[in-house]
Amino acid sequence: MPLRPPATPPLRALVVLLVLTALLIGPSSAIADTPKGKDASTKTEPKPKPKKPPKQKPLYWGAWIGDQLTGTGAPWDMGAVTKFEELVGKGLSVVEFSQPFADCGYTPCIFTRFPRPQMDAIRAYGAIPFYSWGSQSIPAAGPEQPDFQLADVNAGTYDDYIRRFAEEVRDWGHPFFLRFNWEPNGEWFTWDEGVNGNKPGEFVSSWRRVHDIFGTVGASNVTWVWCPYADKAERYGPLKRFYPGPSYVDWTCLDGYNWSKAPTHTRPWASFDKIFWPNYKTIVKQIAPKKPMILGEMGTNGIGNRKATWFSKMFSLLRTKYPRVRGLVYFNQHAQGITWPIETSPASINAFSLGIHSGPYRPNIFSGLAESPIRPPS
Image 1 (cartoon, helix red, strand yellow):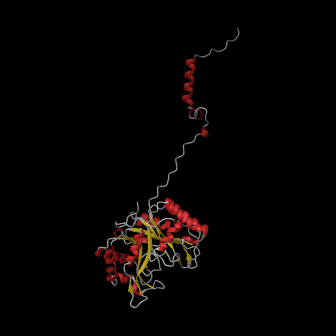
Image 2 (image 1 turned 90 degrees about the vertical axis):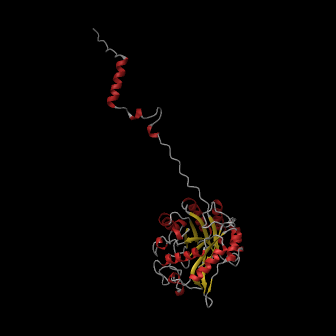
Image 3 (image 1 turned 180 degrees about the horizontal axis):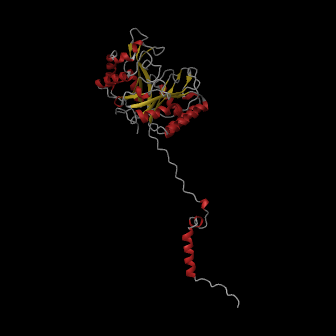
């Protein structure tokens, strides 16, 4: 008899057989996990959207303007402020200037009065005075002034003078920034520790003494600005050593410069970030995390496009990386053989002006400012 082909199994039995085989062997990832018609190697997860930097908060801005624009610096000639405003195309909200305790070019020394006419002129323009007041005398060839040591301030030698000055401040009655004895972490001012016979701890005690005298006479219209020099190496000691404490400081501050092969300070070219970031981070994270900051003096050497690029990067960093900086003052003067002013080239002017116009830098709208301590702008 011819052989017959094997019988075809029933359909139900075949399905059961396939299911059992799948359970024993396991599903193939190439079959089970791949969408129909697509290769597994082409499947990608959606990329997260990049985070936008936080919106920049408003800032005060201004300058410490020398005599190169009109022959006399501001605020003794407010025409210098007008000229600077014309360069930038925007009004300034802060105007800085400085005075010492005394002028000892005379015998006896003539002690400085509160500069009421200059304060009035700045306020009438619509800006906030940024007054730097130092416990020293002029003229001075260096920091060694034995009659103006920190020990003299602490001993009460100048209490009567400070009290009269504070009473004049109180009687004027309007708010202003007071940057007292700035850059204490250096070696170039009479009040710096380590020079002029000053000892560790005397800076803080002298600051507190002066602050307390102002408080005693009711000079509450002062906004106290503590302003060390931007020195990432902390060559003269950690910044915290010079901090008077939160109840004695309203704003923190930093001064810093890109000297770049200046005749008196031969140094490599330094970016804004290299100059300010190390000490900025220390202050806002460790020393005074709740205080606003202002850049009390800052500037760059250089000319043309190089200076312009420095400005452009500075404004970009202020927008994205330095949220605690709520004000800046540019040192617009010729000093120590260096051309700091922005007007060294059209490119420099344009870059600085673009930065001021592209950010929320407040113009001269503060002639009616009444609150003290001064808050960051809104």
